[in-house]
Image (cartoon, rainbow, N blue to C red; front, side):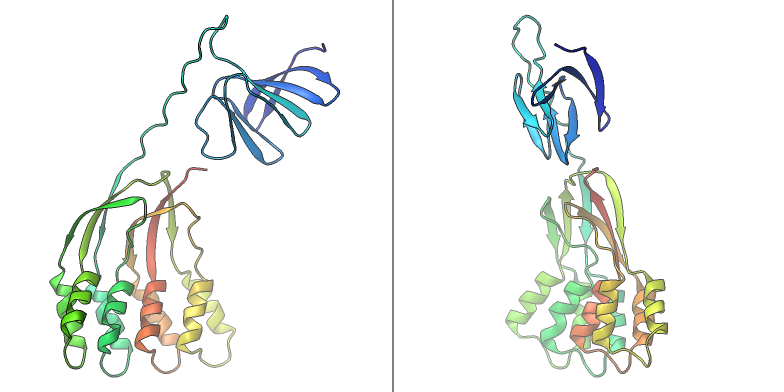
Length: 268
């Protein structure tokens, strides 16, 4: 056997025993974790990703032989690892922003098509309820329905009224994000201005939708939206860039791109 040495990997300390033909043996203690060649190994502890090793497990990782030590002495039974802390629960309210509806209406020519009313309600709902959320309460939002009703030509059919009531509902939910790291997603208007300055002539509404998409940095995967707001200045600036007027569908896409969304994300 060679000399014992202490080896640190990825902030975790492990005991290295003798060097032998196929590598160095590292003994990992209770809840230790380390990363070898891009893969994370955890001994006797909760592992959200990578490889979870149980008491006494041995495996080869690159040039190392990893051993997960037992916690007890003299063959005493191992205790289960402590449970992970409970996820923080966040209350989220999702409701249609009627000022957004008004701004959309002022951007198009003519009246809002009846078939586009629910599309506008969806576009002007700043925060969507994610999969990690449970809906606690859903109530009618008459201000949304009345605002859209005043914008259309004609009237809604019975089925359209039902669909609009659903699209306009005010939703209260409780969410359990995977982490507490705060991430904001919004359209970078300086990026939009640079694109405008480098373009000859005025872009179309369809081009502006693409610009907005290119000037947003989307939140990483595994994030939960907990709050959002409609950025009126973003919509107004985007509208001044374009030639002509947007269609009802294009106006909805611009509004959706002008939402500032706050997420809670995995801490990694």
